[in-house]
Length: 124
Image (cartoon, rainbow, N blue to C red; front, side, top):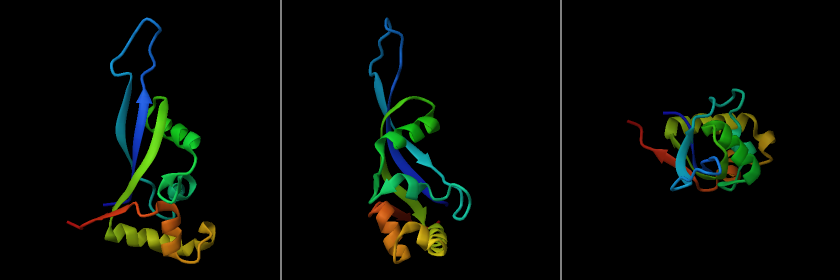
């Protein structure tokens, strides 16, 4: 398993004025697998989250729109889903870049961004 960010995304269908849809908006779960720690883009959580919540709703909607290729009305963070080995890799990478997280420890850094929204699944 790797790291998986889980977001709840709501989007609305855009139709012509003479067309109606029921429902007009939908909610879906979007799972995002970031690049491995240390690779470009691996700090998605630092750029998008704060205390387990989306830190900038406008930016989150734009980002989610790029994931699902439709206009997004809302995007909320649900959890980081991972296994213990992948979480250990993330901890090690955060530890190597601790200054970029403005934190005193890896635990503090992860809590700053994920809050308590880290779900560790058992290894198979």
